[in-house]
Length: 253
Length: 284
Image (cartoon, rainbow over all chains, first blue to last red; front, side, top):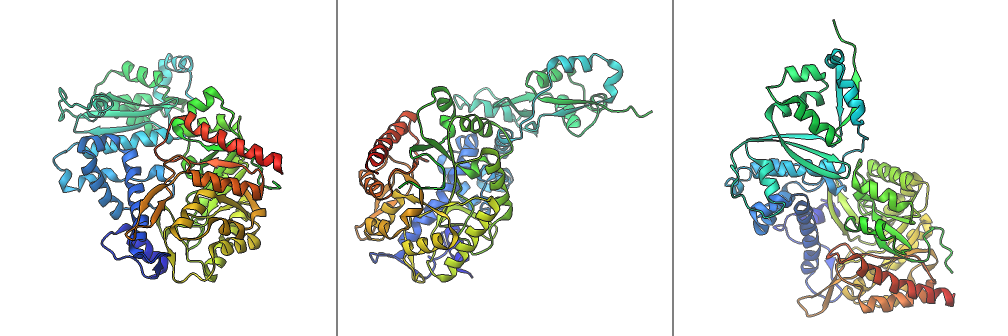
C-alpha cells in the first residue's frame, strides 16, 4: 500500500491501526495525534450528511443519526470534493439498514431531502410569463402539439408514505400527531426564485407532470394520466414559475 | 513592501458565509474583500451563485480551494481544475489559493487537509502539480502553509524550507496562515517566529487569521486543533503584529467556519485587523 493509501484507509476505518512512520515532537503516542485527523474526517463527513438531512436526523435522533451516518461514511466515503452532492445515496443505504426498519418512511424522507438539495443548486432558468402561457393555452388547436419545458429544479417523488406531511411537520413542532403516515403522497419539489418549495399533488397530476418532463405533448400527457384537476395542476406550475418554455411541435397526421 | 502580484487590497476580509448573504447585501459593510471556498460554488445555479454574483459586483473576491489535493500521490483531478477555471472566468477573483496538503486518494475524497511527508519526491510532485494549476488557470496561485498534528519519520526537509523551495521553483505566492503557524508551533514544539522568518516572506500575497480549539494530550501538553470555530486568540493577534512588521500591510482574511457568530462579531474582528493594517501602512 502507498503511504497515502494506508493513511486514508486508517482514517475511514477506526478498527485499523494507526499508520507506521508517524512521529510527534513531544514523544506522545503518534496514534493519539492521528486520532485528531480521524476525528476531523469522520465528524466533518457526518456533519455534512446532517446538514443535508435535517428531518431524517430529527426523526431518529442525533445519536442514532450519527451512528448510522458513520457507517455510511465508512461504506461510501465521498468521491468528489463537491460536498454539496455527498450523501446522494443515503436513502438507498437507509433502506438496507436494518436498525432503521422501524421507521419505514425514513428512506423516502431522505429522498425528499435530497431532492430539496438538488433543487436548491439546480441550474437557473427564467420562467415564461403567465400571459404568454395563457395565450398559448387559449388556442385549443395547438394543445395537442404543445410541449412544455419545466424548470431544471423540478423533481417528483412518489411515496407509499405521507412524506410531504411528515417533512412539513418537522419544519415546526416536529410532531406527527394527526398524520396518517401510511397515506401515500406524491411530492413536487421545485425552486421558485431562490426558495425551494415542496407540495403534495394528486397521483394524476404527478403522472401528468412526469409525462411533460419526458417530452410528451400537453394533450398526450393528459390522456395518459389518471383523472386529476388539470387547471389546478397548471395553475400550480404557472404560479410557482415552473414553466420555462412552450414549444409548438408539428402535429403528426 | 506590499508588492504582491495577487491583487487583493491590503485590508481585512471575511469568509462569506451563506448565513450572511442577505445581511452583506442589505447593509453593505465596509469590508476589504470576501473569500469563498471554491467547491461550494461548483453548482449549476441557485442562491449561491445569485448572491455571490451580487456581492462580487461590490467587493473584491478571493477564491480559496479546499479540494484540489495538491499534495496527492496521484495526478490532479483534471475535471476539478476545469471547474476551477470556469469559476475564475465567471467571478474574476483577485486571488486564488490552495493548501499544502492532500485530501484525495484514488477515488476517495476525505474532506480534510491532510499532512505531507516533506521529502524530495513530495517536493517534486507538489511543484509539478502547482505548475499544472498555474498553467491551466493562467495565473499564479497562493499556497497556504498547513496546520498539522503529527510529522513523518520520512521527512527530510523542514516545512519552511520545503515551502521556500516550492515558491522558488514554481513562482507561486504564499498565503501565510498565522493561526496555522501558531497551531503547528505549539503542536510540534517549535518557535513560531523562527518558522515565519524562515519563510519566503517576499512572496506573501495574503494572510489568514482564525481561532483554534484547545486540547491537552496524554503527556499534559497543549494540543491545538485548527477548527475555525472560535474568536482569534490573543497569541495569534500578537504573532500577526509581528508578521505585519515583517511584510507590511497585506490582505488579511478572518476565517470562521464553525460556531458561526452574528455578522457584526466577525466585522469587529475585521476592524481590529484593519486597525493593525493601518499601523503597518504608516510604518512602511
